[in-house]
Image (cartoon, rainbow, N blue to C red; front, top):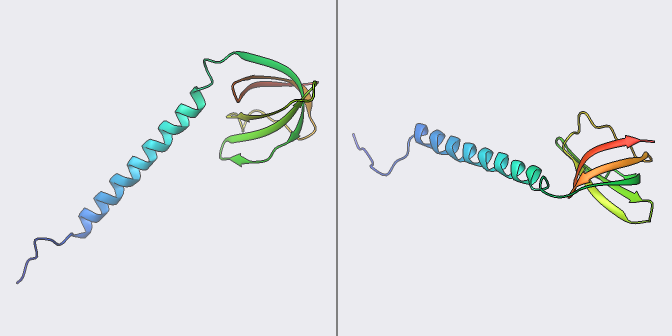
Length: 107
């Protein structure tokens, strides 16, 4: 019976794969928390806007292109995809910090 000292058995492969997968999940969670919290220290801004476009949705993160009364366009995101319902063409007052929508009130 020959035993090769360099062979890797199935259990070791599964453990290594599981470790890498858990590491990737932890990094993804930390990145999401960093992105979500980086705007918390910025000033709260409120503007009257019209929603022009809802270009992409990534999981629970929704992006919006909005036009302000003065003609400026801004791209904002919402982490409240399940509770904040905004549609293209809506007009109202948006409150945001950095790029994150805090609230939207239709008019």
